Image (cartoon, rainbow, N blue to C red; front, side, top):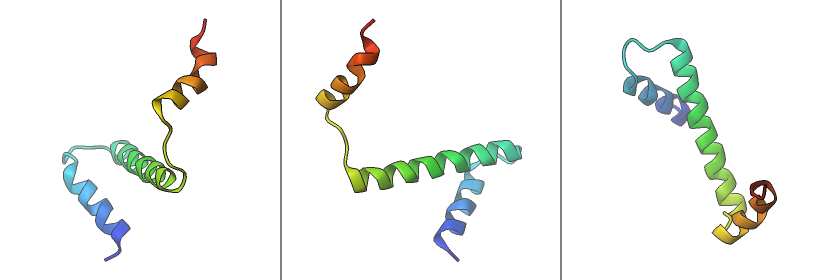
Length: 62
């Protein structure tokens, strides 16, 4: 069984029996976004607190 299929089956087993298709879709979306973010972190690294503060300063000054 493929890793993706195994992961989906595990997710389905963790959800309540009365979940809707929208619930399943949302949880799959969240898992996909987390995996994509983790891959980006591995490829590009992360920002320091100082870098984040500098980037956000133009938005936070009011």
